[in-house]
Image 1 (cartoon, rainbow, N blue to C red):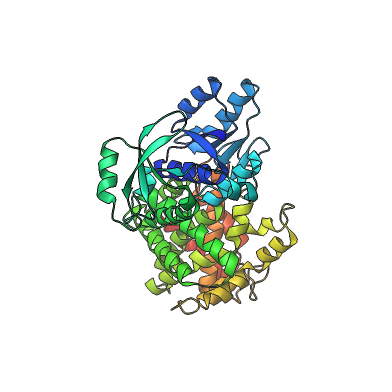
Image 2: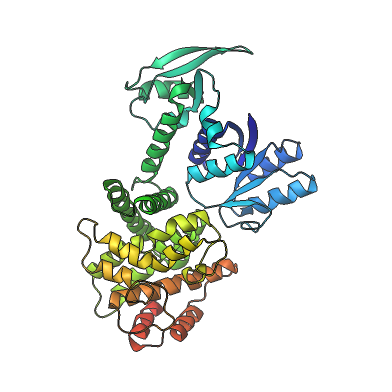
Length: 450
């Protein structure tokens, strides 16, 4: 059994990672919720076989501090950084993973680092009773299988008592044991992989609840965004599951925008939740586009709703690629990246066309959404990226293009660790988009709340 250190201040995430990594990779994690605690453990000589950390916790650069400490100790423990907000993210010092609730990627990378193959995972010997964090089992209304509690333990075995049968209500019993301080329940080991998959799905659905606090809603909606991207990347068609998750996510984005009604506040809130480039692009772009159509003479609430729908789906076929290559930014530049395969580059070039074709199958798709998505890089056929923005595309496609360019300038400020300068951003946009119709759209940004 391998041992590792997880540095994260998100309790639900900690349980989810610990459960999945133990089940699939046989990795036992020590969890520390602050950087100072983690550094104390490292300096005490407990580096383990792997260290997994969020890129930042509050204002502290966890990745950088952990790498520096390991160098001081002359330790070569591999470090996995989740997110891109550390100074060592996307460097050769660490393995960088997407900043979201993508449990399979964490499991896959950990298995790769520890030399655990898929065959090893399936053949892994486990005891008759397998431990599961009580906090994860709380997500079930009825028991997914037989549930046990450990009542006594020796050096070689333990005595287990059945808490409930499969399919039985057990929330009352869970609360009872939680009040007693119990942190783990047990399931038959033969059920472990089924329960892992079920609990992961339920947690994501729970986090998609629109009544969540803003911080949790941002995390949850990004999970849903990535989940839809993964499903579409596999099937390239709209399924009932995609429809359900998409609608929840779009509702959540609308609530996020209402709760954080200023550009800088929204940007900082999203960044504080360690989000990825495409999701940041989608939420911020929706915010900017809705402002433009409120300000422009021909705009309407119908246009705003249509653009909200379009922003959720327009880059969806890029999601698996950006998840696989988390250092990627700025779609126009991605095509030149050496790490992309020829097949991935073909998807990048055609992602607008693919999304436009896919969206036509979405029930009650807003009229004209497919054309806006098709033209969102200025090309009327949805293939490639234009360098000369012309007038032969939909007015709402122009709003999307300007909104995306605005967001990209904000991201450049973020990457430079500077506060955004609205006047300078508008100057950049006016130099990039010289046609009169684009300038009228850019004029609307002068009144945006910063």
